[in-house]
Image 1 (cartoon, rainbow, N blue to C red):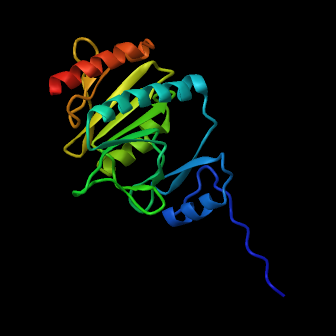
Image 2 (image 1 turned 30 degrees about the horizontal axis):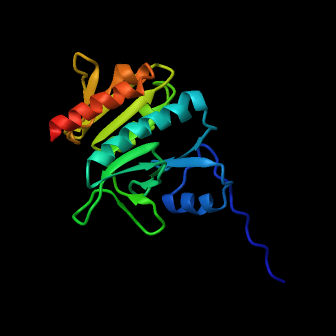
Length: 214
C-alpha cells in the first residue's frame, strides 16, 4: 500500500527556516499570502491598507519610474523577490538596480527572482516601529544595499539612508526639504511635496534635477 504524502507545513509568522525550506513551503502557500524570510525568520505580511500602503506605494513607484525613463541602464521592480544570502528572501516594495551586460550586483536568475543587493530599495512602513526600520534595515545594511528609503506613512516622514563605511547614515535634506541620492545622479525627492500629496511638485523637482544632470 502506498504511503500518504506528508502535508506541506504552512508558513507561520516567526518560523525559523532555511531559504530552501522557505521556498518549498511557499510553493504550497495560499496565493494571497505574502511572506518574507529575514535572516532565517519568517515574517507574514498582513493585508495591505490602501491609505497607509497601497496608495503611497503607487505614488513612490511613479517617482522611480520617471527616473527610469530618463536613465538608460536602470530598472525599477515592484514587489520582486530578492535573495540575499542563504537565509533571506524578501519582497521590497520597490527596488532600483543597474541592468546590462557588465558585472552586476543584482541580477535575475531562472524563475525571475533577483539575486544580490539592488542599489536602492524603498519600502512603505506605517511607523518607526515597523520591522522595515529594524530587521530589514539591518539586513539591507549587512548585504550592501547602497541606499534604503522608507516612507513612514503614519509618522508622515521619510527616511533615506546611504551606506557609508558599511553602516547606514541618514541623508540630510536641503533647505527646501529635498533629499538627493549619493548613488544615482539626478535622483532626488521633494519630501514636503510628497507628504502634501503634491505629485506634480515631486515630478517637477525630479525633472529639474534630471535636466541639470544633462
